[in-house]
Image 1 (cartoon, rainbow, N blue to C red):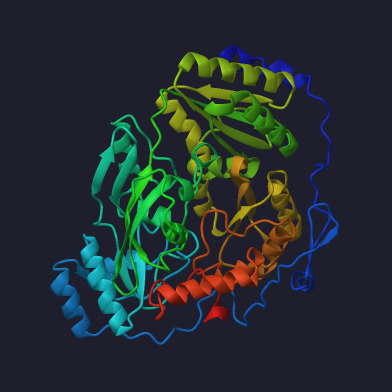
Image 2 (tube, rainbow, N blue to C red):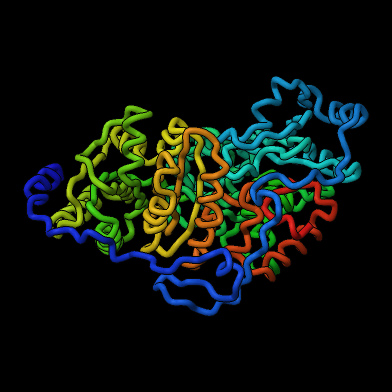
Length: 534
């Protein structure tokens, strides 16, 4: 395999002349007037009729906090009740509350004065029953690794942390079904399963901090979605405490159950606005006996997409991940984290992972793919890792981009779903649109899922830059029939942009469901649903 990659030096000299302009240009542009009309630009540059009517943005900043709703304030009597049921686990010390009031990006800060740390479903039920009767707002919180302000208070909501609900309840070694409390950290679950020859069906860069309940509540995607699908498919059952304290026990461990409505799906991706997830049962795949990671370089995004097509065709059932990052991401990794580029400099980089049961079989398929990819000049350089330490090093080039961005300045983050052939054109168009107003504009993400992570940095928070980014980014996404949130959720920051991806009838129905399950609106207020529903 090493010999195959060494041939890239002479293969590079034989590369065909590259087209100076990508064929994936988007000629259509939307003005604000276009966005509120029944006609949206399609990717081909033509205009097509659309039944989707986008919202009229509120007068205040759409991603800013709305006015505080008329919830009650916490009293000494309330604290006495909480201390009675949570002895030693009712936190009011401002220093201890500080980290729970601020999101991971340090862009949203609440002013909660109470942090509750239940250990059981019964305790969560007691808390919510009481808060509902007192009209006290509650902010459910897992690992607090969210990127859209959904996991921290906006005002003085009580923080309900699931961190102490971290027990594994059962694991079936035959079916691979794991049942655990919502506060289990994803990495701890992975380690537990690996000892039993299984793995979690999802893998995230924040796995050392994020919790499975939060993963489910946000319908987190991650690096293995291409192989194992979304949590809507792998989660078999949930236990959820509703706003009034009722416990909804849908903690099934069956692959098939076609009896009535599949209620658990309502809570997957609901961001804690419909109920508090307290336990999860999830289907886990067997641990692969053979894992390979390849890091490749491409000259154009068009060639990267052709490599993806070739990869899917030749690797088939062993392909478990196909990720990309651009040269700007690599620059940030080099500059801020001192991570060296494992190959020669290229405009685009690919991380491919294969997982299978036979090392010889998988290596042969991978060799054949690499030989074909370089012989056709789709790939200009690359390296392969089969040892765990080297696999980890190559994956860090993709997983640590978010960390590198935090060192580059204030970051505006966008998590977009687009048709696969369109995903990088948004980065190109954004760079052209912003010019020198932004410090960095970078793109990386999950090619197999059509999920782009667009990140824009500036030396400090810049309202003028934000006004140039939004709503441009959402109009562009809507013009290509994309989604403004692929896997991060809407939270506080993106709630009012939901109409760019969902028709008004669907949003209204979401409001009806919220009103039915949480009539007082105490669960994670100001998040997910737009202000005009209130």
